[in-house]
Image 1 (cartoon, helix red, strand yellow):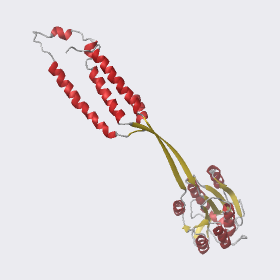
Image 2 (tube, helix red, strand yellow; image 1 turned 180 degrees about the vertical axis):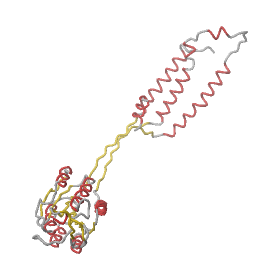
Image 3 (cartoon, one colour; image 1 turned 60 degrees about the vertical axis):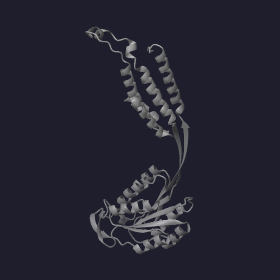
Image 4 (cartoon, helix red, strand yellow; image 1 turned 45 degrees about the horizontal axis):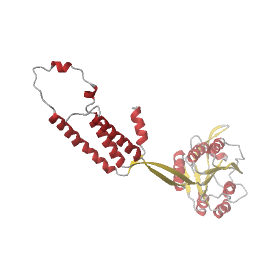
Length: 338
């Protein structure tokens, strides 16, 4: 098995320029048939009373090797056919060029993200699904902006996804003032992270579960800024709009509801040539990220340079050596009388 494996490792990358010549190997069959017929015809006969003395007589080396010339000739012919088929080895040098996308996720961390219509709550669901999204985009730079009553850059644009994921997972309530929601400030901070980017494609994923009720920057003005820097904004509303849900508080689980300004989110997306999505549970949010992943494809191109070299010479040398060995055997110690 090891011998076969070694043979396969040598020849697995070999290509033949003239593979049709392997049909010539079929000539071996009539040649062997002719040899068998010829030897039987040339065999002398002798009538004796008993063959017992001949059966007990030891066979000489010459007798045991009487078929060696034919074997050598068949081997030489086979190797010669391989050489004529012109085996070539190839080496491919592949250069991959990647044109990644710069993506900033602007994540709402206001108190309403504690609501439990997602599992285990809105914020934790958003963190888990955003992490899956980033892990699948190895060629992109990603950044993270958190916003509540104010906005904060948790992670600037980076290609170090391990660090990014650690900062994403460490995101929790109370890192910034979470009493209200400043959508305009969150979007404006994300735009600021991307405005000096040299990437051909720049994307913001803005996720919120409320309305803009604080901050210094108007969301539409922030969207105008994004448009001026050729930044596309995908907006996602997270949760049920105006419906009761549960939220965990220091006093236990209590019913609550949030209002989502869907009209504002649609306007932001339209103004920046993006898309508005609505997520009401974990599965729908995961589907949204899958759609965004498909719409924002990283451009990867490959340049393949292939080098080929002829490998017929060793086979030709082996074939000649086998023919010479066959002649030496035939005209020396395996020589037969006519």
